[in-house]
Length: 186
Image (tube, rainbow, N blue to C red; front, top):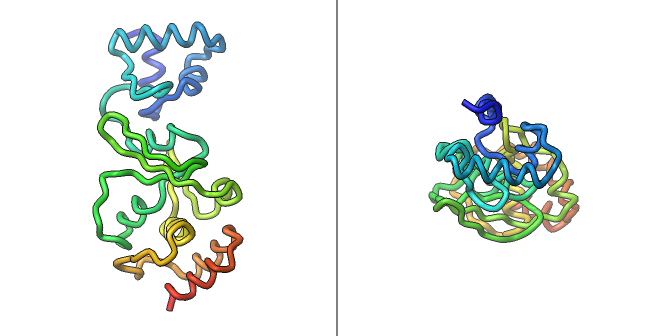
């Protein structure tokens, strides 16, 4: 096995951006990096997922891919709340907080990015690092949703720690949100 590919397989990451590959291979020349990537894609050692994003194989982590599409970003909204049992509706889409609102399909997987203002997006409160991507806590995801969608219906509010919500709501700088939060908490 080629040394460059061996370095990739030693990495815990399953998804790589051009920047990741440049760091792993210690390749600073963009022309050399591009030709190296192109060579490994043609050889079948790298899978091209989309422009400037690759994987070792088809067994990549979808959340890691979601977080690699745009930076900064973190998995949130319905994706986090469904796993916590706050909403019961199943979504194949992975919902992500980011700087832009758009939906992207890559390799038959859908990623929906929802725009949050920079002061919220860049605030790490209530966002956990899960290895190679970041994900909102249940409380942060709940607040992200009521920030963008006042009056959102939730199936089960029992998993939510209201004390944490009232601490986190300050990062949104929105008095209406505090009022909304109090209504949900009652």
